[in-house]
Each structure stands twice: as C-alpha cells, then as structure tokens.
Image 1 (tube, helix red, strand yellow):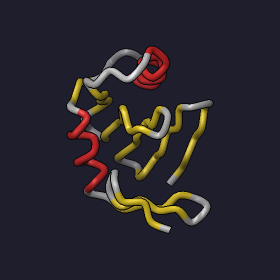
Image 2 (cartoon, helix red, strand yellow):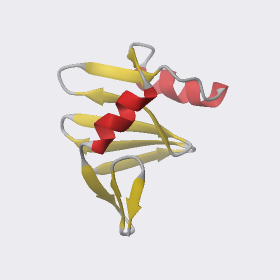
Image 3 (cartoon, helix red, strand yellow):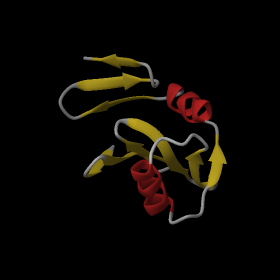
Image 4 (cartoon, one colour):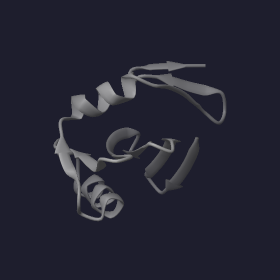
Length: 93
C-alpha cells in the first residue's frame, strides 16, 4: 500500500487494481484497474471538487457515495502508525 498526501487530499493505493482519493478524510473518488476513474456524485465543497477534478483529470464516472463506502467495505487494510480500517466505518488499532 502507498499513501500520498497533498495538503488535505490523500491518495491511497490499496493494490495494483484499486486506488482511493480522500479529501478531508472522506473517500470521494478513485480508480479501478480496467474500469478507470470514478467520483462521488455527492457535493462536499469547492475545495473537494477541485481535489476530485485534479485527481481524475476531469474524466470520471459518477457513482453514489454509498457505492464508494461499499467498495471500501470489501477490503481490509492498515496504514502506517498501526491504525487499520475495515470498511469505511470501523477503525481499528
């Protein structure tokens, strides 16, 4: 797993087939191998929209925010510092 931070935008490369963009700790966009970029159809802020458009280069399929949460709910991962995440709601130490 690779984590790249750029201010309040964080890109987490979970595998060679999945990447998620977080803006202010909310998963708002991503990339799936063989499918391309997706972005939430939920509006959060002008800054978050800027993060999404920069990340997706303006070319992304719109999906529901719940779809992104469901996608994350299918995987388990840990980030540096010993904090893990199983799905979008359950943070573990």
